[in-house]
Amino acid sequence: MRKIHDKVFTIGHSNHEIEAFVELLRQHRVDALADVRSAPYSRFNPQFNREPFAATLKEKGIRYVYLGRELGGRSDNFECYDEDGRIVFDRVAATETFKRGLARVVAGAARHRIALMCAEKEPLECHRTLLVACELNRRGVEVNHVHADGSLELHDQAMSRLIKLVLPREGPLIRQTEPPRDLMITEAVERQARRIGFRDKSLAAASSESMQ
Image (tube, rainbow, N blue to C red; front, top):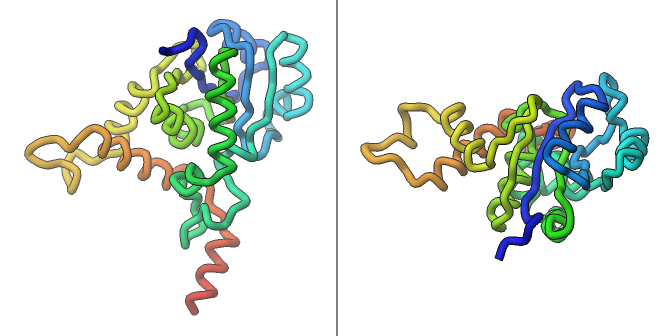
């Protein structure tokens, strides 16, 4: 049986003023924020640097927890990267570190209205959607993406938008009958993740040298 708070929101801080950002959280009655940025600092938006941001949220009565190491879009585990040095989200999701972070979110969602925060304004441009939200969705957690204007987009709606955005209308996925939706989502997420995911150029260089 779904608990009253058994849902999770995601949000990007973008270039919001801090008061406007807090209002977005209040609009959706968010009382706890999980920061899933691998690097919780912004040169262009210092109001979201980890320490002052956490202090501001505390003043506003909103809990703050940093989960960037567990649920960030980068990893210090080289096995989570391919031969080109690009992060592979499926490999990240399979790590024990990620699983522990996700378990904390799932447990917390039973007690709080939690928002997962990263930097990008557009949900489809961020690992919070392509990695974390997808894994939460697989575990039966309802995920709602908060847009900059305060509107909500259910995760399933976001995936429909992603399919239209990145899958070709002609090609191997398009047959006389449309392939199963789950397969289309998987393909769309993989393509988008490869486009926007972090690339460690040092790993790519090391891989190239090892093949010479």
